[in-house]
Amino acid sequence: QVQLVESGGGLVQAGGSLRLSCAASGRFFAINTMNWYRQGPGKQRELVAGINSSGTTRYADSVKGRFTISRDNTKNTVSLQMNSLKPEDTDVYFCNAQILPYGSSWYDYWGQGTQVTVSS
Image 1 (cartoon, rainbow, N blue to C red):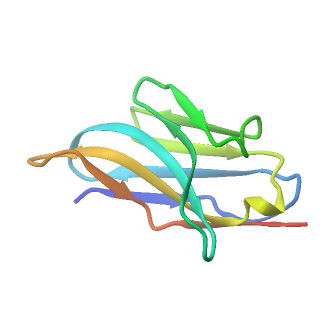
Image 2 (image 1 turned 30 degrees about the horizontal axis):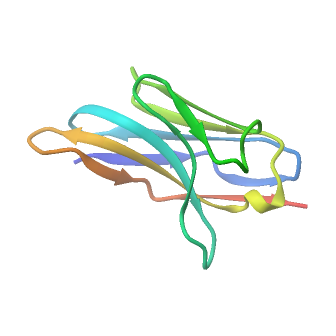
């Protein structure tokens, strides 16, 4: 069974930094794009950053220049380095990946979410 497990959330003061990590486990052939989304109460889930298997990245305008997404294809992990954090970055952050499991077709997997809280 394929799973995404996140770590690294927490409480930080404005201007501080946090690093989120997500590891894919289970039996699968390949991972395509890996993304970080975030969602607050009553808000739609929004894409924060994404990275494809070739390393091409994309970012939401609100985080450009502050957040950096990276992946390690040998460890099946994706990370999000968040610097210069602002109170409006407070949300639950979700890892997402398109994965090809053994004996199946490409599927969108989600992590359980990790809380990031930025105090002013």
